[in-house]
Length: 206
Image 1 (cartoon, rainbow, N blue to C red):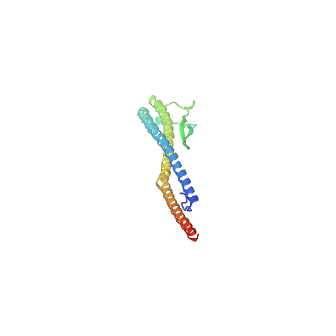
Image 2: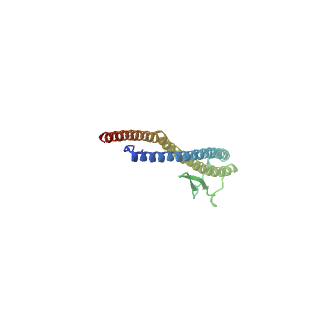
Image 3: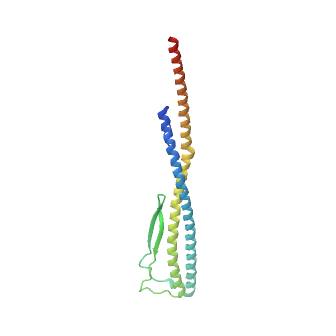
């Protein structure tokens, strides 16, 4: 908040007017930023929900194929060495009104090693492919969720700043300006009265 201990007089009035103009302009700019952020946040929330639903769908499909594969081949059909290479993830970043957030993710699931044994049945082959797709879908969902959270946090922060200007600082500056102008008006009135008295006194002396 600005220091509102304003000196009286024309200099004080000029200072308050300048501060009030800056505060109003800042509030207008933040209002425009808030409108843009809200629209973008709504888009990101929709993208997050879509990505979440896609991930859940992929996961359900993968689990369905896995259950079928286990029914056909038994628990031992999953025995085997773990993959030698982990999945890779590459995230592309962007920004919205100065808010940095992820835009897209590229997830690479390593293929089966040539020397590795093939799945015991066709259902497990489908399960392997479905889980790879579920991993990619999970990465897309994570990016969409992170983007929505980042922009959402900025929406809340900007809203608080707008409220602080509209509800606190600007009214206080308006009140300060009214006090300064009232003091100036009273001072000018007193000066006018003193001048009239001085003129009358000179006329009486003459």
